[in-house]
Length: 145
Image (cartoon, one colour):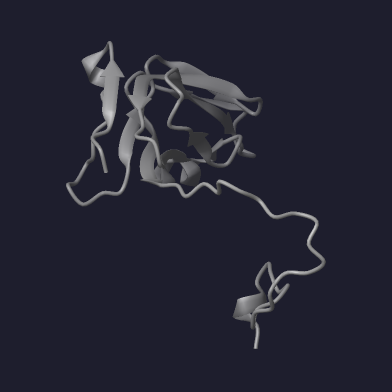
């Protein structure tokens, strides 16, 4: 993989791995933000240049999801040609409180960069696809006997 290029005005927002073997880089909130049950965009202050042939995946930190936070789009996708600031669309879902603060520089998400294979050509209007043992089984199919 080519090197991941990162631009950050604020050094405190620079994404880092907590441990050398971590898959993801921690993303932090660039400013304090009140999160409620409606979608709220949280700025990270981070811009990246992802190498061609790779994609960035943004996921909520597990500790925040345990507290009731979620990314409204589940997992964010950062294409290799995107140069804007990474922002996380978040919401807070709990029966106990209508909102909660995200503090400035709090770790909120992780960025994982993985290879992305894109098809150059598509074959459509097929009569059928090749058969497999699994076939059309999905949504828990492989866990049933």
